[in-house]
Length: 425
Image (cartoon, rainbow, N blue to C red; front, top):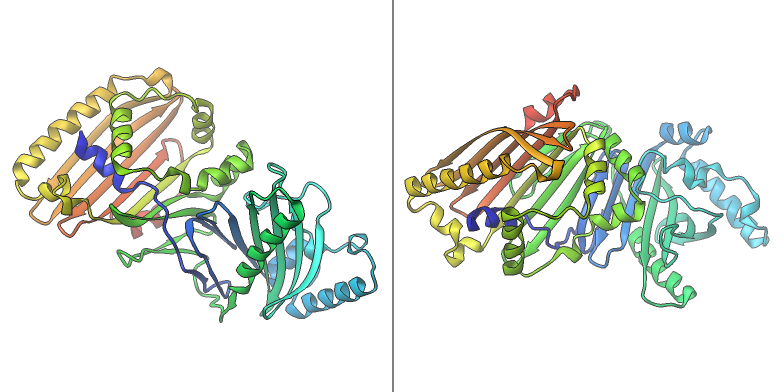
C-alpha cells in the first residue's frame, strides 16, 4: 500500500516558481514571479503567486478587437483614445461621462469567465507605465470586497494587451490597500516585453522542460499548469480540458471558489502527514462533504487530460523507488497482487452511488531500468455518467517519471486524434 500512496504523493501540489512566460503568437513575454499555478487558453494567460494574488494577460489582434467593439483598431487608434482621455483628465472632465467601448472590460470577459466583471462603474486612471501608455480600470471584487482588481489596457504592434491583477492585503485601511495592490500591478505591467510576433506559431502550446516534449492544443482548449518543487522532488502537473468545459465549471461555481481552488500554496504539508492521509483515503474513502461540487464537475465534463513529469529524491533515501529495480520479478508479482486486491475492493464498493468501477485491465512492466503501469477502466459516476479512463505511469532508475491520465465520457464524440498523435499512449 505504501508504494501506491508514494506514487500519488510524487505529484503532490507543492509551490514552485516560473520566471517568465512567452507567447510568440501574441508577441510578448512577461514575468511570473513566485508562480504556483498558471492557466493558459487562447488569447489568455493567468497565474497565481505564493500569496494567492491572481495575475493575467489577454491579447487581441486588430481583427479581434474590431469584432468586439465594432470599430477599426490599431495602436494609433489606441494612442488617440489615450491622448483624448489625458486631455479630459487635465480639463477635470469626468472620464465616466464618455462612452469608451475600447476600454469596456465587459466586452472582453465573456470568452473566459476567470476575469471578473465590475459590478459598478470602475475608477479609471491614465498612466505611463514604463514604455507603455496605459489606461487602468480599478474596482473591488464582487466576492470579497477586500480584493482589489486592476485591469490595464495598452497597445503595441496593432495588438491590444489587457493586464489584470486581483489581490488583497491584511491592511484594513482601504486607501493603503489599493496602493499596495497598485504597486503589484505596476510591477507586473512593467515586466511586459513586446517581441516579434509569429503568426504561424500555434495559439496554445505547452513545452515540458523536463522531457523536452511540446504538446500543441486546439484553440478551443485550456490547460492549468502547476509547478512543484519541494524537498522530495520537483516537476510539473498539467490539467487540460476544452474551454467550454472550463467556462461551464466557472459558471456553475462561485468564481472566487474556482480561483481559490487553483491555489496550491495552502495544500503544502509534511510528507509523512500527506502519506498517512492518502493511505487512509485509499483504505476508507468516506469523504462526501463535497458531493454536490463533484456532481457539478462530472455533469460538465466530457474529456479531461492530466499529465505530469517529475524527478523525485525519495529513492535516494532507500524508499520503495530505490528498491523497485533490484528484484524485478518479485516486485512485479507483489505489485500485481496488490493492484488486483485494490481494484477488487474498489469494484465491490458503490461509494453511496457516487462512484463505481465497472471494468478494468492493467499491465505492469519492470525491467532493470524502467517500470511502467498501464490501467484502462470503465467508470460510472452517480449511476448515470459513464467514462473511460486511460492511465499510464513510467518511472526510471534516474528517479525521473511521467504520468498520463485521460478521462473521456463514453458518449463523447469529439475528435481527440490530435492528442493521440502527440502523446505515446
